[in-house]
Length: 69
Length: 405
Image (cartoon, rainbow over all chains, first blue to last red; front, top):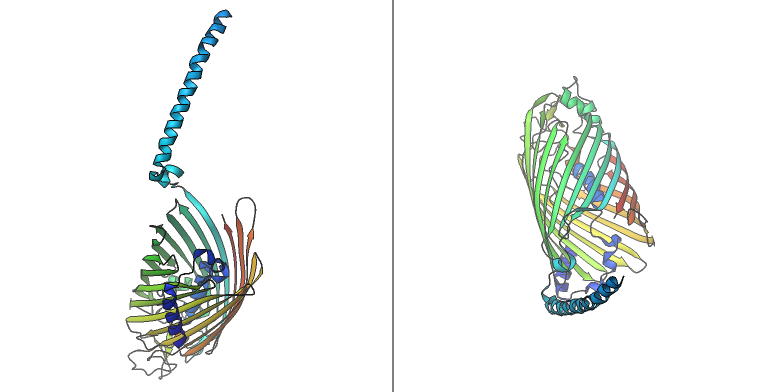
């Protein structure tokens, strides 16, 4: 939790120091995407949603498909 | 002949003068056009937006799941359990992304599940047609989203979808939007999604018992921030509200009197989740991705999930990835493996039990330039091993193939 708060603080503090677009080439690499490719994210999320009761609530579907949720 | 020469000679002078006049008109017109260039719109210079659909990418993915384990909610075992949770799933998916002009992007996505499960097989006596069919279940979803780019920094998206299984129907619709700030160093996003599930209710013997429904409303807000030229972070908070029948209605609970009973669940559930993600580019042409999620709900479940992925680029077109995820959760206050007969709420579902889970995985991803119809050929080959502290293991193999135009 502390690490998350530190990340939040770092993110808000750096909002003033913008990184120019011509210095963001590394961020455009597919390896750097903060989320997985959509179909991969779906199958992985579904695995967790249907095996762990603490699923959903983070912008992903919590109700469809499997009744065990 | 003489007349022709005379005519030609006579004509040459007017023709010459017409060329001069035309040149003057063009020059005059050009100078006026140059003077008005500042007022010209994109549409005047580039022509009107092309409203025809243009396919940007097509992706297919096939995933196979093979699960072994035991849980107290399963009937495929002794009365006081646990029963088998043996399960196999074959899941093909197709996704097409197309643009319509400069501002509109459509995404059509169809995942299909073919499931065989041990627990429905155990119904005795032979259940009715509907639940019998669910021993081998085919389910599919049709999902469509349309994104409208209002300007360089803002976009909104509408999504809608339909999910169909043998004893189950589900509809969803949602609205989301994002706004980029500070030269696109910061992106703020939000979404609202509603889901309505409508499905057959069963007695635990497998006999159909009418219909049940469940509604889900989700809202989330997030911020993505570029921290440095090699670091990006994302934070998201999500709220989920559920009402209605929140179980599948055929799971069982072992009772203290030696019999099986049905699950008794609350009719509502409020869930909160806070997620943090970070991607860091590594100097040796690799990347480190970190994920943390905190979850809590009013059933008394608290959970923490931590995930790390490390990527290494092998060639400009190919990279390798390795993944580890750890998840720990507490159970709801009404979880039992042997419930009192008079308990007002009871559940024995191993997915709701206090547990720890681990996922180990690896993948190979390629984006190979091709000639001809497409620009890039995208492929992925992945393997995950999922195992849990309460006797559940799963092997997952997934392959994707796509074209980028």
